Image (tube, rainbow, N blue to C red):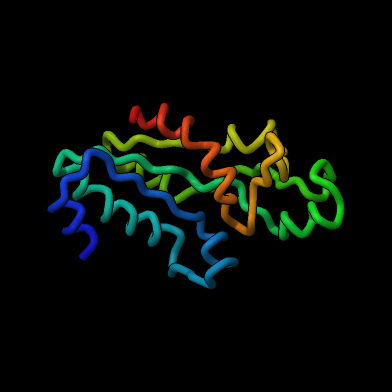
Length: 152
């Protein structure tokens, strides 16, 4: 069991990230019986880690593109409004789970992806999305931000 392995390893930090239900449904066709079922699953994972004194950080889901960003950029241009991803407020189960377990650190990287309500397709000459994931190159550009926020 993964949880027991983590508890046995006693790492300095456990980082948890996941998609919001819409992302799981669209990308993987995964569904839960109720919206609270995913929250409960996260709480059931996080609470034992915190109860054992482990440091836990969650990274909230990034804005989810509803189209192929690379295809759009190739057909149009990186600055094309059609290629921008909307920054919309979402009910993130990881946030809700973190709110139920004291001491969990929460990181929202949306401010690094978006300007107000728009998330550009390209930032600093780097393509941001490859599908519903960040490109490897863009993710690497976030390393200093995450390192600072996680105090590594």
